[in-house]
Image (cartoon, rainbow, N blue to C red):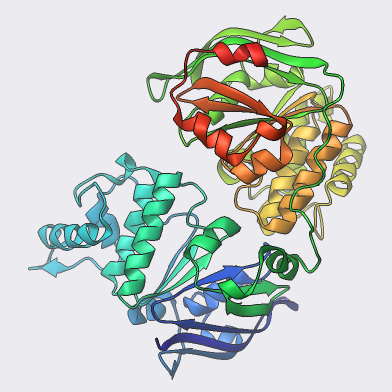
Length: 513
């Protein structure tokens, strides 16, 4: 193997604040380098240096590709050498075909016209390499997130990729789609491509990476073979301190006081024209963390959204809150009934990224912060500052746009927005997706603090170690139904997956809940 790409003593600042402080990186052909670090460690800034987003006159240090110094003026210069980055937010056009998306930036021309037949032929050849089950004429909007991820990789291959940078590529993929992605990555390795894999999911890093580079505070802290470092050492390098266990001490379940009971719940999803939750019953207690687990598409998110009164569902069944029958016909009614929901995708549905941090926190509580139609600013600001302190949100000013924060701090703002409503039942959908291990620990500690204060917390998560490590009880869903309930020693990855795959036999497990 030969060195494809190398950086030496890279420095980059923004307004006098150092983002990179002398970063060294080496990437060889036919290897996967895992790039790890907390949000704000400098990973994205380094990738922008290497992919031409920041031209040479905007950073200091040496950057070379195949032994030649690079002086990129734009992303196109990097792509011309085969250095391609696939961002976490996919850069695709939903209304175009797969072929049109693949060749959107380098469409071949024939006799003054776009050569559609040529791109379809070339695209199908690339798709065959990737082993996908769709063709070049497929409309992009008809593909799953995993399929669209493959289209991004096909774009890279069409540009003769030599270095492929993948930024959190599995954040929205099913387990099967993840394994498909890994198969493609291994095939690209065989073809001599060097890959940089940015992820917060350490289990995936174990599976796919050959070497590891850990960044912290804009510096390269550790570089070496993956096999030369254990999990605890890796986490300690990332966060700058030892974390003996990723999960805080799980609270013991106290004398159960039922806060929420759901009986025979059904949810028909209008946009998909099908039943997503079927005859689902459960109870949740004050001061406990209840987990909702299951495979992708099992109905976890549909359950929470429909219970919260989302307009995309027609529902039937009964909700009892503190033993009183209630209705959540819409989210505002749910909030008034004491419910809160932190959504799965904070950027699309949880936050207004261009709004200030304090405005985002206040949004769900505006009806309760007004007197005769006017905001009570002092009360509003004091409560927000108290929540910022309680959640340990790292910021320079609450008046800054929320998009200036790291992913972990954005997630804390999304949680703070709903804590402003003083809920008694808090639904958390994928509460730690796309955030680093240090921020995860802080959110887990916050969840424990909330249940100590008497909240009932319900977590829907695809992260099995999270469900096992944090939840007192776990309800396992399969195809919209309850497959079983696990607690104590029975709450394990193996048992969850066994229930998730075994066909549901009616709803007979409710007798154990």
